[in-house]
Image (cartoon, rainbow, N blue to C red; front, side, top):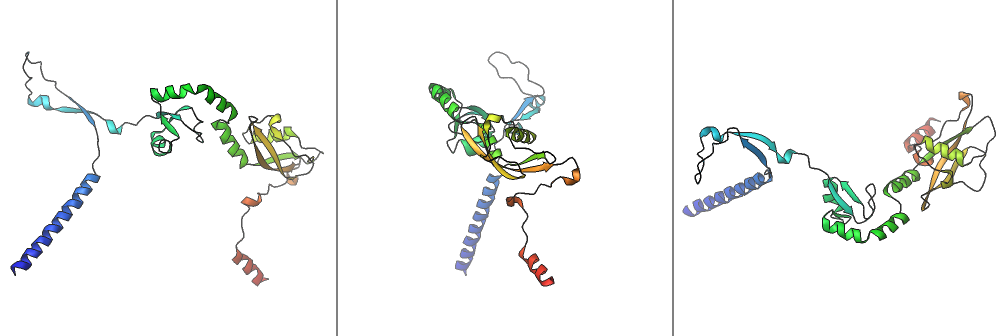
Length: 252
């Protein structure tokens, strides 16, 4: 009898210990390291030399000033060690969000802190970095290259007069699509284009990289009823489900 009572008591004590551990772990999860700044509403009077000021009850009344952890943290300056899309190229001193730097750039070795030592180290290779920047596209040029590669350009042409597609027509169509390109950067197909349809032309950025851009030449008439409706490219055309086809076959 006594043995069973001792066993049940030990089991209960183990259960209480586990509950205490879990509660302590949960309590630790709720802890937040914070800093609160306060000041005395009634500062104590000056004390005599060699003596401590005597604090009264009114001197212990504190006034809240601010919470440090509630203030928005400023962006962090860093030096890029490699090209980062949308941020910059190697050697650039940029300012980014702290979350981006600590979670992505710094762990992957794409950026380092902008400390005086790192700035001095990158200044030594400044001439080499300048040569690399001249031979590589900038961050905005890379973004433009990506935008052009996924573009499907609409090129309106006259439906009442004969025409031959040239670089000026392409440049105007790109300008309507919020892209500024010079005529020297556009390369048209070798065959002359005189009819509407899909085309593919080439755009060169900074004389370094080229990208193929797809487009559609459409006829624009003075009479709006004769204007052609733009068809979506094959990639964006809606698919027809099989069961709809089967229903149509059974009905017919």
